[in-house]
Length: 165
Length: 293
Image 1 (spheres, each protein chain N blue to C red):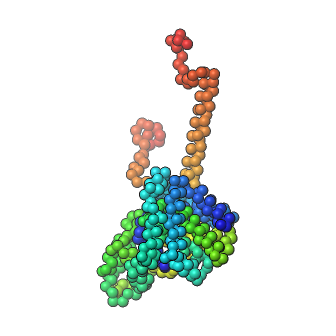
Image 2: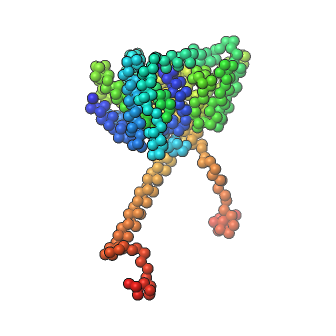
Image 3: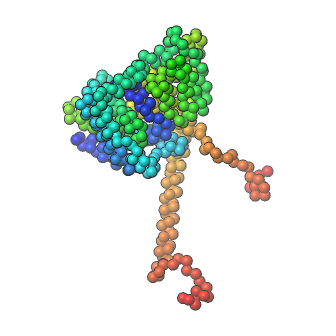
């Protein structure tokens, strides 16, 4: 395996938090690999990769779709803390395969561009757009803690000592 | 398979909540930072930091911060055996294609159904007049009923961005994808109007057909992350992140302070007990104890 991809894989695995999710990530990656390499589905991945367009974007989008399929297979039970690292590991797997097939040369720049494409595609797959994210953050900013009573003005002797009228 | 189809399947199968979105955004930030560090791409690290902050602060603010150990345990045990699940896909009669067929037939080609509605050019259809969308944050009832696919009020709670599934078909989600803010429309009855803008987040406002009708995502990565970076330059958003940072740093500082204080107490006890065969920090004094000593 390309040392760069190997290092990326190990770094991603090390950053999985909480660590209990590591087996889940491995299962998700295995599931993705099965879809990627199974006889009946392999040609679909190849077809995806052969689409016209910028190579990094195509690779990224294909891996994001693959991760989306895996996500549907586990019925959405996989937490994002496992799903996103699995997406990255599947990208590494795909790039390694493509490099061995002589289709691409994985350089740091290429890997960075593919990562950007895969993550942005994955977020878009979930329906996340910058506008929508902005709306969510705006909404969050407007949120007040529920059930918190409004602050009362100080009363009584102590309150008066503290400046209450 | 087209991006549209997979996006529809993902959103139909998975209840995409704000928690998930913030968690995904935070995780993506982490991954981008990690890959940026490995590849030496400073821009990627910077984007990762920004995205991670949005996800982290957003998650913190909406009480959606990550999963704890117990949740992770639960995930580890309840996540269905993904390998088995995927082998079902691979080994089923049609495998991937069956999924593709299901989505394409189920969606009845979302692009063909949805585009006329998105462009409001359905002539002679029985679509009632589109009710204007309230520009409130709280509820964005998108009333765009059709006879077949009845209107589904899209996620009343802006935070609960759950996937409404009308008639169990992902197609209906797409069919009732609301027009984007500000777009003029002409109803089949001939009246015209425009969809008012609003900052509300509904289930599928972002999942409009014009965005997803292509085989690839609607935005390339540079445009996608560029917009997010621009959004973060807004002073209000910057303030939010700063607040989150202060909160986080305060918590870290508090924890560190607590550890330091504990260390001091331990040291004091150790010094006090020095030379005693039996450590006793609460030794009482007085006549009786003196007599006993």
